[in-house]
Length: 450
Image 1 (cartoon, one colour):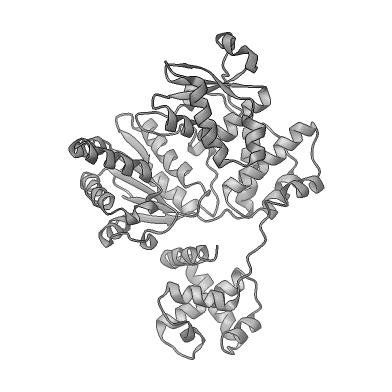
Image 2 (spheres, one colour; image 1 turned 90 degrees about the vertical axis):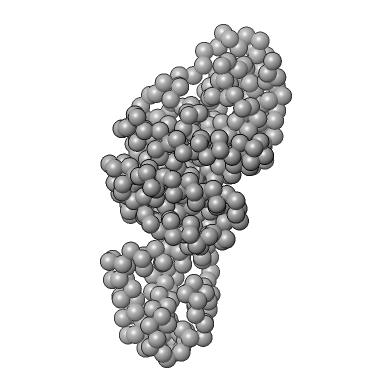
């Protein structure tokens, strides 16, 4: 018989390790497992506020730790119950609604064990902006003809920018549109674990058969494959099996395939056969849209001036935006009144990152290393094509990203005339509009400054 107290104790230890002391104490202090029924874990919570918060903010984390500690878990329900009423838990009705604009049956929250897809990752809740519009357009093309367009599809970008949401939304949409197709989502870490377990159990053929039965396979966090030679070998053969049979392959990574340390050239070549696109950080207009959408999910109507202030000062990733929004909503509900901009400034002061100070020399070094040229050559008077391109990119970034004046840029780069700097800046700016390769190079370079 399952010892629910022991199970939840193990889960709480894992959760505590991933949260701040204050957050853990606030949201998990008075929680416990009421019962397990057919793989569904009923978690007791003290009030409606905690129930809503765990469901909307921590449900993914809770499901992950439950899966780590109990292999038969199918889902989790949150039930308002006091500690002393554990023995009467069966009398307490589980929640049956979501704090989002449309209600769904509770079973729709369960991660499907057959495909590992989270049903909450859909395009209905995916915000499209300039920062991700190319990746979104490619995803829509894949859905129309899976396995035929952009195969493989490789999307990369820093953490917290919506890569997992995008690739799982593709999987969920294909599953809905083509019921006959088998879709499977897995992280690279889980794929590697499955492979190692299969080898140790002398079931390598079973492993191959398991993954080759799908029509669409989605592998998240592929950047970790670089130092796994055996996993790269297996991935290479799996890739070939899918590609040759027009089955869709989708990967996500925190960096471009060409910059995954230790990745074999043959895999880099395979990734390049399809479409490689990046997701950058959301610009101001997209941050506003994201904040409004997230506030709508929590049914919290925040004034536009609050939304616009948060979007202006928080220029990080989507997770950081959501975390700050959670803080504002929490404080609003606790105070039972709207917050002023002054109060919000106080709450968010630890979340607002100071812009990193980067010297001209730092920029030159990073770009020189990126293009495998000597730093000194950028300062020299030479018309070698590769040097000119690197120098122009240095000038463009110094102006565009660090707002350094044209004369000062020229002075710092060996006494160049400011008109030369202006010409270089405008040339790169115009080339970016028509050269996708250059655009990807710029994104990769900018990521090196973070």
